[in-house]
Image (cartoon, rainbow, N blue to C red; front, top):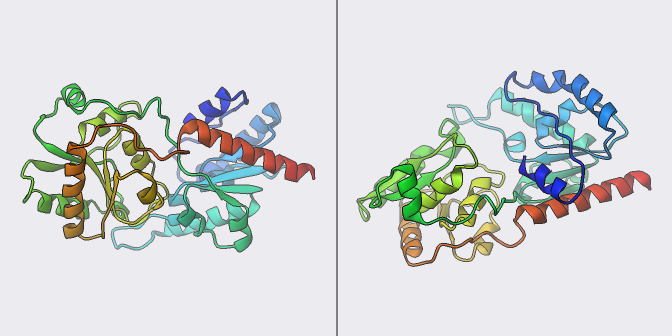
Length: 308
């Protein structure tokens, strides 16, 4: 977890408790005993749950709980019928309960904070946007990246670094947009990149000409900020952290959720990128070290509130 490393770099002690990825929602409840034992050993000043459901693993204690909400925990996911799954509905309900019992909350975007039901909970929630490790995510030459990955230098690659199994990502819309783009740029193709190690992703961004976002719902998303840090333009429907459209210094192209609008924006973005030097277009304040400082300030506010 990169935020933990950034906090450690500031001189704070951070102990992690991994909840794992298997076992379904019950794993959070099963972990309560282990979390309690860890808290007894470490005696932390603050417990930080880094996903809505994760707060279920934290037993009641005098130690203040801070919970971060990242997207799916409050937005949910939809099934093949286009509706929220029963599991997601339950997850949203549980996340709302975790937010209620938390001393303070963090949301990765202002629209996500608005997904919290209770006004009092929204009041105690601060927007701290997803941050990027700019040591890892930085511009590399496109030709170098393509040689490294064994890709043709002649293709126009539209990277789609999202889980195609999630209907909310709308990969079909991205496919339709790129199909229209091919009428103007025959060498264009949609490049779906999933499940790559974080350390490899800067090379995939570098090899691409543009990134596309067609999601119905998003929290941040982190991939947009990573792509901007790696110096490639992004075409997105209005979703997630929409303030990026104003802050990304021309590298963000907004389009309506139609194949025609997205194809036109992709053409403009590719043309823009072909005549623009690759450098970081990440907005000021979204670096990992800045985010860590903001989180520490929040922790101190929580502790001051407890001591008052």
